[in-house]
Image (cartoon, rainbow, N blue to C red; front, side, top):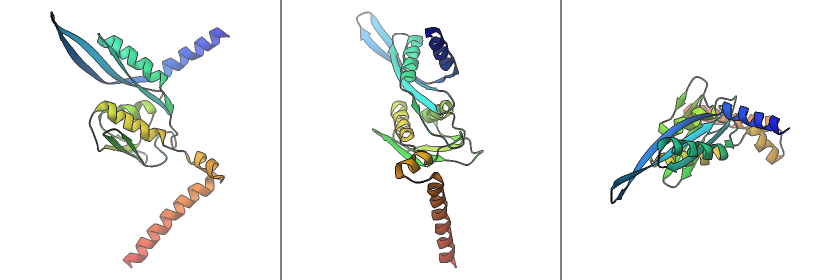
Length: 190
């Protein structure tokens, strides 16, 4: 039975995709010269709605990347996706000076996002999204703000269960509100 679990874990890890977001080199000045250290930021996902990020520090780049990848695998979250390609609703995320806006998009839009956010969406499996970073350009804070937003995404099914309603009631009421607002706008123009 232990062999089956080991095989399942190995299969799960082979399905994961990792992207290196950035490497930072720092120098410590000592008597003999400079000692360099490296910090890596990595995003890991399965392209099916699970994603995680991690950072690692070491004296050499490969070791820093390995540590960051392990940390990312430990900190994975699941994000509900609409049709497996975009978010269910628009959302904002904040972390420190990082402030990001994530908007769901129609099919064919692609990933319109910059830098570290693009890596998160590609590994997550999102195909259509529009994202904007308003705050800092620091990759650590941008990724943490993006994850704060992704953790707050709720599927209509979960909202319906929480409210004790059917999913059709929730989705229909949202459509009816947008229909009535467009009709009100047309009436105002007339």
